Image (tube, rainbow, N blue to C red; front, side, top):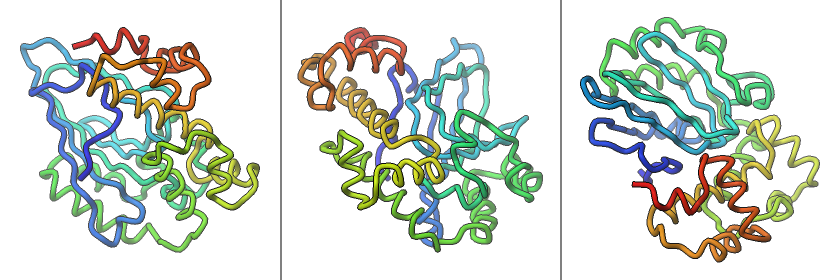
Length: 258
């Protein structure tokens, strides 16, 4: 599988492990991967886990809660203490709408109890907490096979466009997405509201910040003005403002972090 994107500096430590597992072929159209994070920090300083947001829905199950989280427009921040673990399921962009039965924008910046979306929530949560990761994945797959259908061409087209924006560094403007989609700008905005939960502009901006994070992780001594231009910003100050608003510090300060 491809390396995880969006993990900010300071999150990775040998006492925090992150495993991912691809879904079975029949679910690959809708599920990106299953994941499991565990930490053993008893007697050690806590770890502040931070990741940039993705335009994806996540299901998470922990010891005391089981939830569905929509797309969050700010970075994820959580302080890990003691020992613990989380089971997760990441849906591909646009593919959770059929499960929710409502526009994904209604779930933006929100977390709801698993039982509000899955009738099997109690049994799934109990199984997930009691069984190993791979066994939990198998249980979830059996349920998802009865809930997910690959029969919505608009959902597929929207998913593919979002995923193209994640990897095509030349896609910097909403007008380019409109041209790729072959629909009007208003139609594209409505599709993103329904299937993704955020706007096309937000998706492009977030993925460019993902790119900035990866570049700064690989080479902290980057020419920030040049990087801003590559990412489609009119000037460096605009890039710095966007980066600080999302990450919490300027790109220069972030590059100096250990």
